[in-house]
Length: 445
Image 1: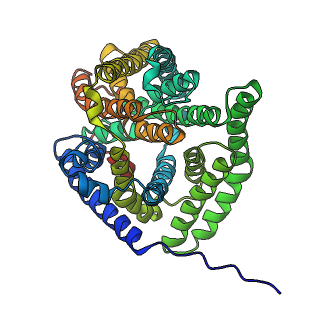
Image 2: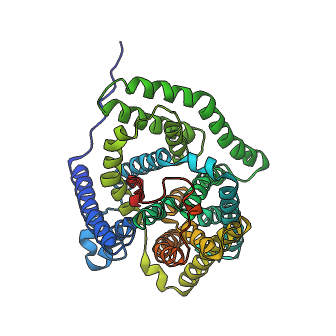
Image 3: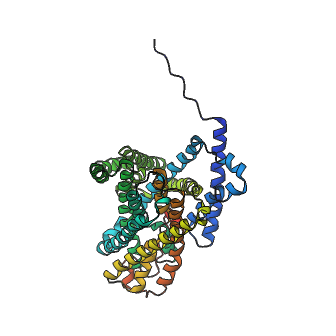
């Protein structure tokens, strides 16, 4: 006789109520503060992160501890529900970012973009690793290997957030200028290398630092990219071709979302970061040759108007600004911020000068590459989830993301005001009075 298993119980009524109220409050505050930030010419992510700070331990936990304990209970099961929504949001956000990358810019400005990107990536990477070894061990979570932490900090400080600067370039009608094109092309290279490095360091954090496991951590991402190119791209191309037979956007959205979810699951199963798979899948969709960008509009809208704000608000929940009153944490924040800014500016500036750009163009490139924004926050959340970062170091890295994103637009505007507009700087991309194309939805963050 076969005994049927008892049915799995559904989510408890109270747990569902708390989750719905968490989502509603975080989304309301994130949208309101994001719009307020945009009104003051700041990236929307600043307001969205601050929404989480208001609801988290920095503000609500002090002002209304009873209500805070009810809304954000300590039970892991309850918070895991909110985290699950946030994880879905970040995977789709990273996938959409991969779909928005313009690899034709890299082909057009390849050698110069590579020089700028590598110089602007290797210097902050090296400085970040060195800083990680010099920071007090007391700031690291118990059991964290300082070598892994140092490598992770180096990766965190070497990434760039091109969406922030892309929005600024569009607002200033500079997207067609040479420096604008080079900034975006260099950012594409930075994004690809950054996700690759993050996946390797994350695998080291979970697998350990033995020689065999380090080799595996290096080979797995390479294998993922090869399989994606050889097998994944043809499959995505066929799926999108079939979806394009429908005049509706639904099939295209479904194929794009399914690609991101399967890519995330694949890399996660290998012990790599799920966001790496999401990024690779997004790139496959964008380079398939079958993508109709207009049909992705519903997916972009859902991700950028709902899931992404909720994710960044949950990221803000993990920040505890009261930790900055401790001298050790405050000094660490100042030191890491200084290293992050110095490394990116000097690296990108040197790469630009080696490519024959003048000092103001080099300064503009440095400002653009210095912006960390959304990418840095995602990296910080990965470090927190893996246990590489504690509350203090997580807060420090998110502060780097906020400060550098706020710095980029005014410095870029000041530098570009000094750059002479010439016929050569149009790069044959439709100079004269031609308007820039509509901004990418991903540029909101």
